[in-house]
Image (cartoon, rainbow, N blue to C red; front, side, top):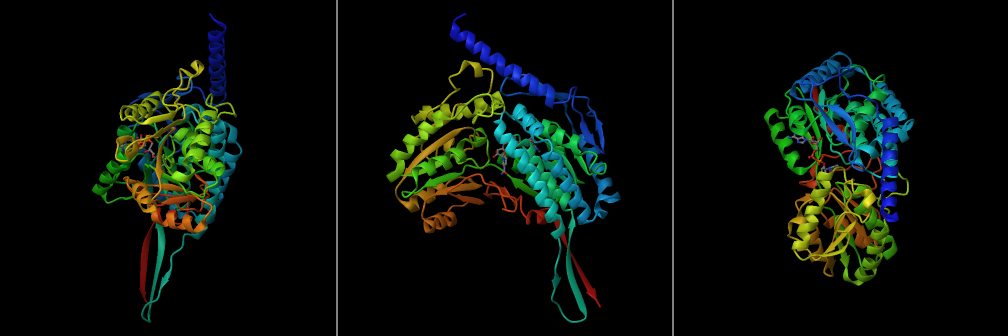
Length: 506
Ligand code: NAD
């Protein structure tokens, strides 16, 4: 064995050993069960599935695969908990509970971060940020729970008209794999704050941090208030989002599945919140500070390995800054530390699964066939020690037609697509020429330009000279096919409550 190959083998062993040790410390032994009515139970079918570590491709845990029967049980438990107890809790009590949950997460940041890094592959510094932010969302909604009020309506004398906001009852929630703990927090916190009970289905690729969250907080919540049904989309997700006793559905995931969820909700006229895909533009103006612009674009594109619904994947560079920007941008992408996500220096980990890495690389292949220029990346990173993992090198592509499939569809990996612009109106037209409208970035030193572009771009969130900032309280959600409803803000509580008018003849 040559020295070089021995060192590859050694490094690979070090990574595998590190992951096995982390997994044995952070993930409980034995098959994970469903959590229904305050009990850990096997799935009705007895079926299980495996969740893998995308860095090493080793199995991390075996997890119960829920089906419609389990969903029925979980919804019935949530219904009883709502009627028997939770509907009568005061906002003050719910505030106390949510603050307690926040504290529990804060007390175990490292464990939650390790679990998400093992299960999803995201760099540990990003998983730690997710855990802190997840706790902060619980704190935000703990406070917001106190302000779900109605109003009095001026009317003729001798009458009194008022509105109150009432919870729906049982909420069914389905989340994706890209921010496992954070998405669980985004969903659970407002639903409970508003006085609903919950059945949550995490993504089949990354169920472990939601399981750990429930283990951590099960003594904080009355039985049945929060139920967790792990499993696959068709088998567990669809029965939940179409269940007749689920009065509110909140779904985060792809637009394709979001459409199915909305169709199913039509059968029972159930209210839905949908947080779906994106294909966000980032616009760099001629006056932009190149160093700052590169920093923002790196964050917009490569944060969370490009597995962000908000990822700024279509980069519109003004011709005046393009050359200087591209030189610095390609260098920064090539400098990004790709590797074991458990190491704190790592900035880009593997994708969530080999299947997802292949999907991303399929788009890159298509771009090649369309004669696009691949400035950097375009395949797996050049490090044999990472060969078992689902790695995709940071990739920058130029020369694609804006109508082509790789530009129109969500790639959901570390792949940037570059376009040059000179005419503002023509650039805005292209920036808006996708089915999505989730987010956008604008980089300029000129506030007038920033405002103009922020108004002209069709997106639920526009970041100026920064990206991926999600302060609790700032509404987040999509225009067009990126979704319906807004999360993370006071108005989110309106999505989790319904108005009742009371009209009294005095
Ligand atoms: P996905 O739509 O394949 O799956 C999301 C969830 O839906 C999973 O839990 C899955 O099991 C479940 N599911 C699948 N089929 C279902 C069905 N028929 N009925 C009910 N549930 C079903 O998406 P994904 O690949 O897990 O996640 C990536 C997608 O999520 C991307 O499109 C991304 O943009 C989107 N996303 C959006 C936001 C946002 O806030 N807008 C945030 C994160 C991710």
